Amino acid sequence: MKIVLRKKDSVTSIVLFIFNIYGEYTGEYSIGLNKLIRFMQLFDKNETSTRMGLSRMVKAGILANKRRRNEVCYQLTEYGLENIRIWNEGIVRFFARFKKRHTEWDQKWYLAVLMNFNKSEKENQSVVDELEEIGLREVEKNIWLCPYRVSDEIADLSTKNDFKYVELWGGNINYNFPADRLLEDVFKTGAVRKSYHRFRGVMEETKKEYAGLKDNDGCHLPLLFKLGWNFYDTAVSDPALPGELVGDWEGDRVVKEFRLMRQYLYDQVTGYFQQSG
Image (cartoon, rainbow, N blue to C red; front, side, top):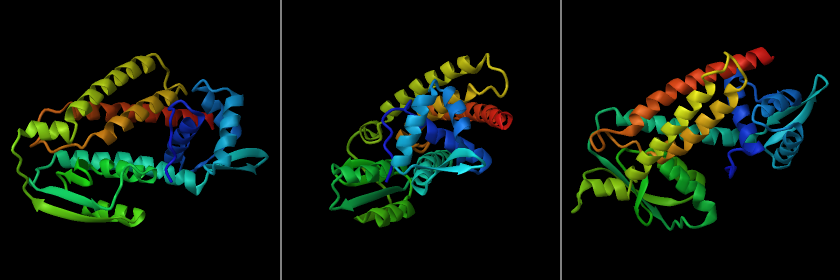
């Protein structure tokens, strides 16, 4: 079950981010309490709010606490690790689509029709989220379209969530209205373009914030969080349509710059982790 994060500045959101980055760097998903408190102070979270948030995460089954070498440590449970994998998978899927955008398109479309599926049911929201994350968009009720073949992803999703579907692959599509309308009405290209413009503003703001920081300063950690959180929302909304359908695309320039910024901030953060012991 996916953890729903309603506030990006909540203790849960920040702690999961810290575990994700720390685990990516060290391969360990266990962090001492004192170290966690220091990390959280970089996000303007005091010790009391951090302890309360950690306690709630333990009760929710996201973290487990144990004593190691006379220190209390917090470790991600399998449930916590599963959710980190879900979020990371969303980014991996985006970059897979983004790579396809920059390869020659075979002009073939993929169509999936979901059988007896009610997307308005609360338990199906995660399925809808995943359908969109793999690049599908709903044309009409339960009819989903994508310019790339996603048969394996649909098969895996249907197995996990127990729904039936019919798929069609390799066909051409015809429509009696301008192509731009299909891109706008179904794939929401206008809204996604605006999202990239907003994210570019976040990147410019972030650049100004780290311009005066020293190397390996811990203040890079909340900036990496800010950059990644905002990029995720934009990336999962982008179907990354083929260049043959959308030529000049703001996302191409933004993603290139994001990768450079993310690598810079990640290097600064891992340097901070190394110094902090």
